[in-house]
Amino acid sequence: MASDTGHRDDEADDDDGRIDGFTSDGKEVVAVWADAGLSFHLSRIGGLEFRGSGATGELGLLWSVMAVVTCMCIYQLQLQRATSAAASAAA
Amino acid sequence: MRKAFYIPFPNEVLPLKQHFLPSFNKLPPVTTKMGTTNSKLPPNTHLPASMTNGTRPFPRRFSATYKKSLTKILALLTDADRPNSPSYAISWPSGSYGSLTFHAGPTKDHELLATARLAGRLGSDFNVALPALFTGGEQKTEILRYVPSFKREMWWFAMPVGSGADVRIERFEWRRLRGAEVKGVEGGSGSGWKLVGRPDGQRHGASR
Image (cartoon, rainbow over all chains, first blue to last red; front, side, top):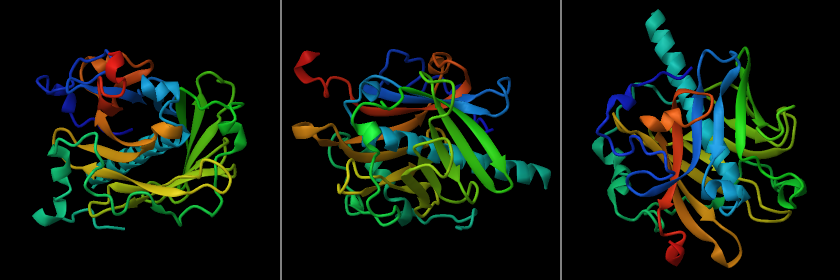
């Protein structure tokens, strides 16, 4: 699974703790990807949830497709990082 | 494949500046490659009619599972409202350093919707080739751009959104989830990403 780089320890950071659908710099959260924990069955990698105007369809289908694909792009880079971290740990 | 230890010169990380410009709602400065005619998807790749005529609404929530065999990777996306079988698939036919394809069914042989391939100087951008909205429509490629940062790396893209007379280009950013946000996500393990759009109050204008 993708490694946690410890960003969440930074409590003073801007977006911390906002669960009302907007970031503290005022932007709307339109989708959330959550990594699955290892306690779930092993094949599950996570979940993607559309929110706000991302869930109403008002942004259009191509945007929805773009959101899914870009989410998986980031997942792919996490996979690369996890693989290279495991490789250097084994070396 | 780009070498992993490649170190960019300062002039090569110039796109970083865009992050600090107060132009979130405007067309981003880098527009030359946006929406270019795409050649990475077969011609006449368009969304299936079932997705555009309402018989197969796009899911609001997906659960993703993983299948790996040697170098091939497949992620199955299951609509939370139709949990019996996966509705979509993401395939990495040559593993995590190759391109991905997005399919309108649970295997890599199902109808192709989009592709993404690694690009950019840091090897962390992606060119995403999107389908046309309808038969004979225009196919575009959009770019997912990486903004490196020790504490808050992010990826952003800008594309036309909305429909009819209300089509406009908006910018979106994938940022890491923080703090209490993580707890609000069902089934999450404590890490993840959020996609943020335009500022509060601007989309809804006078209604807020």
